Every structure is written in structure tokens, then in C-alpha cells.
Length: 360
Image 1 (cartoon, rainbow, N blue to C red):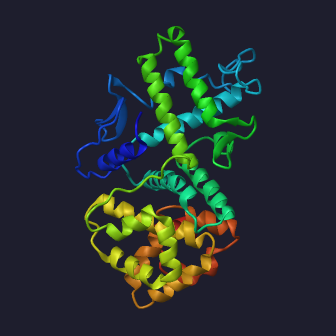
Image 2: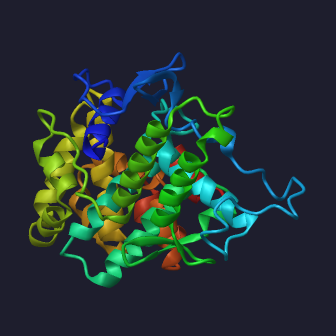
């Protein structure tokens, strides 16, 4: 069974060119492709990937095919399931599995890539954050899950098809628990393996390995597994501590806001010597957006006041906050806040931030 933390460490190692030795994983291993992307391949099948194994088994889209007399493959298990629901389940399972794929960032995908990675990590953290109340955790869980899907991207139907029931993802229409569906989905192809041999490269034991990994990824999203941790790197000790322990981050901000601003000040002015360091700094700033500003947007006034004599770091921070993701755009919309009423913020916007917020 693949340990998600080991997988996550390997993911970060390849994505940010950290040059570390790969952490051994059962059943799967990463391989870098010609386009500089990377995927999990089956250890026993060097030409088949974890993400692609079921693509040949994707049910036909009922909107573009004649499926009036067709039934979902799991209809005997879930009588309330129809072919449209089956398609949505397939898309979500694919999206969860696609979390393992490493895509090189470019100017077209960098925002979505950051948001999806960030939200996956934060969903693993929420259950352990005791300095938030239940309402705040629920609000953030829905927020992170929305952007995790939105940044994939998925179609609109899949985007709104699932919701959390406590720590369990449920298909809202049918009340089918996603974890139960995933288990039975893989079991079906194992039990009917010989009917699908023409489409399958892998063996039944490999389908079992896929089942366990997909469930582990799901449990990470649901907060049922041990929370993920960003691996340590020299020079990033304090930032890594704040990322891996949101309680500590919230305590620091509540008890010593000045120390947090000083950390941001020194951090953004340091040369970003590698992409992993830059990623960690971006995550810390987005933590400030999602865990602080989403509940108290006015806290930005204190940050701007601290940096009033330091316009360069203030500009760097605000543009990373507002333009690296669209989290703050969503937060402001939910609170009925108009960015045009905050000239102290917009005066620092660069062209990218202006395009997102002002060029309407």
C-alpha cells in the first residue's frame, strides 16, 4: 500500500527539482516524461500509469450517445444510480487520481496548479486545527474542496455534485458515499476481469493497488488520514513549521502579529533561490488569505500599516496574495466587498492583479 506522505515527498522532489533520492513506494514509481511532466507508473508495467489505467473503461457520455437502455455497472449495488451519475463519479475519481500527476508550471496553468496543490494539502490539515471552530472548519472545507475541483478543472456538473457529510464525501443527489463507490468500482473490474481483458494492460492485483491508493488519496481529502507535511529544507525552518502546524500559525498571528509581518518582510526580500522555497512562501501567504482574511478581511489594514515605509515588499506581498490565486477574489465576493473601495490595496497592484480585479 502506498504511503501518501512518501508519494507527496516524491511528488515535491520531482516537481521542484529538489534533487533528493526517491522514497521507495510499493506498486508504483514516478517516471519523468519527454514533456517534463511526470506520472506514477505501475512497477510491474512500465508502459501503464495509475492515472490512465481506467481511461479505456470510461462509460460513454450519455449526453452524446444512445444509452436509453443502458445501466451503470454498479446499478445492482446502487439502485438510485443512473448513467449521468456514473459519469460524474468517473470524473471525480479521475480528478482525485490526477492529483498525483506532475505538470510543469507555465504562465497559462500556474494559478490552477498552485490552487489545486494548495487545497489538497489544506484539506489534509483541517481536522487537526483546534484554533478554528466547527463552523469555520466547515466553511474552509467547502472552500478548499471547491477550488481543488475548480482548478482541475472539472465540468460544472461534477463541480457541484459532491458535498461533505462531516468527514465523508457524498454524492449529494444519491447519498452514495464516494469511498464506498470507489471500493465497489474497483471490485467490479476485478470480479469481471476476464470480460475486460482487451482493454486492460494490468492484472487484478494492480487493480487492487489502484483501489488502495485512490482510497488513500480520498481519505487525505476527507481528513481521515494523518495530515500531510511539507518536507524540511535548510533555511525554511520557520516557514515549514507554520505550514505544517496551522494551530501554530494562528497562535503566532493572534499573539504576535508583528513577528509574522517581520517574517514576511524578511522572506519576500530574500532571493528566491529555488522553486520549492518560492512555493512554500506562496503557501504561507495563501494561509494568511484563507485562515485570516477570509474571516477578517480588515486585517489587511494592519499589514499595509506595517509596510507603509516599505513599499517594495508590500507590493510583492499584495500581488502574490491577490494574483497568484483567486482565493481573495472569491472571499471578497462572498462578503460583498468591492475592491474599488480599497485604494490602499489597489495602488500596489501590478498589471496581472489589475487584469483580474480592475479590468472589468
